[in-house]
Length: 397
Ligand SMILES: [Zn+2]
Image 1 (cartoon, rainbow, N blue to C red):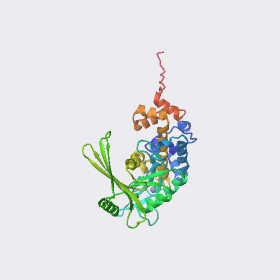
Image 2 (image 1 turned 60 degrees about the vertical axis):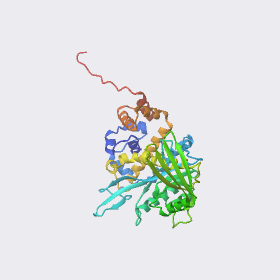
Image 3 (image 1 turned 45 degrees about the vertical axis):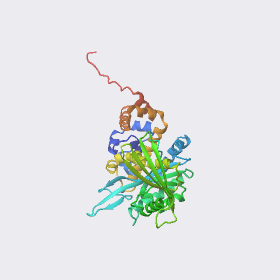
Image 4 (image 1 turned 45 degrees about the horizontal axis):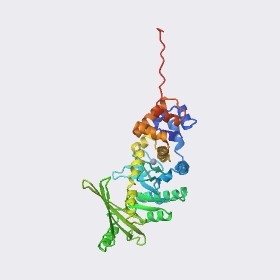
């Protein structure tokens, strides 16, 4: 709970948190009995398997489901968009632990790094994202880095299905994920997909598209978006083999050229198991492109602090790095839930204008004032509190 409070208050480092910690405030606002010092927090958390934090993510998710807030994130036909992406949480030349990925450099030195597969429910029209319990990408003996990410995806998908047996999802990912084993895993767990593809990685597929074009089997669809002043041209073709080694795996291909008013053209291409037709292609494109939200809205939270993550919070020998990264994601989930559901949080955010300023003020108020609860803290941030005026003893009086 203390580590959670540290991320919830967006403390820049464990040391800063330790210096500023005011026990009775943490006790009242976060319900923590005794707050450990920085060394003891590291020692306590290091042996904790990160899986122990999974139920906490579930609590947040169930609350959103019960409160019908999750429904607002439905993308299409009762399906949610689930974005997956690998990200680094820290790297170090000096520190190393059991769950590090090792990068050996040509000069003989080694960098150890932590990566995880992050996941979040996203929606093209919503700025909030709902992060899921991330899956650490860990070293397995004799296995290549890409396989590590693939295996992490496999573990993630299996656990996600256990956590949410009936949730209908469309998985959206970048082009690294467009491989037959991964698509087969998704299908086995009843997940739909819209995945990026690149001509360089999928030569045969793009050849097939060119053949379909010559045979007149492709469909074009043009659409003007007057408000955004962009033109979209779509081309799609159904039922193609993904590649030569998996001719039985059939996919649908779609691509989009987006032309802005000043003539700039961007090109995107995806594969999907969803039926592509003129009525659906625009929405599919929006869903696929909403994937950037996991980069921007989710990982930046980790990355802004992530570069010095090991340095600022501690690396540990077993799980500490992963536990810290997971707790940070959990604090982010709680923050997103507040942003989605709590009018007081929304009002305070609007008042201070930016999240950065909001966290700054939140920390300042937290340490200065004797607050009773999180609500009290946010009410103070909204209405203001009067600082106690110092009273001076005076000789003349
Ligand atoms: Zn490590």
